[in-house]
Image 1 (cartoon, rainbow, N blue to C red):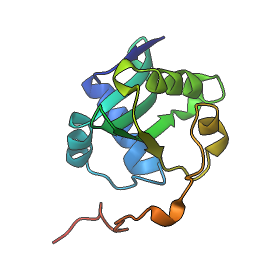
Image 2 (image 1 turned 90 degrees about the vertical axis):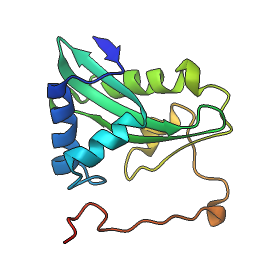
Image 3 (image 1 turned 135 degrees about the vertical axis):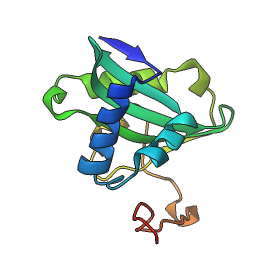
Image 4 (image 1 turned 45 degrees about the vertical axis):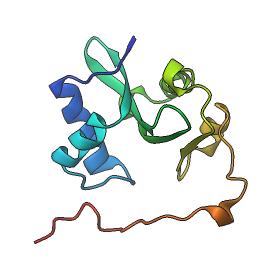
Length: 140
């Protein structure tokens, strides 16, 4: 098992298929938009014999802030500790140390992320977002 930061074309296709078809947060994302996101992120992929097992990406300025996104373990590999291995690599990455804030949004994995130091937002009333629900739908 190895952790890589650069995806092969076949691994990119697997990431795109998962995010665009099976994730609840990126359904419908185009390959072009995902490639732009990956190009502008610090990415983590857990692979075995070139087979993608898990993926995550971080958007960061490397000095004060990071946001963890698109974390998943492919279905056949779940329940084997791969998610924990991936998250450990993310939170211990040398370029992500000493940040003032490291955020993420999750619908259902709070227990997992708490094991890596993430917690509920202390002042949610300060947070705002701009979240157009149809962002990935084609426009004419």
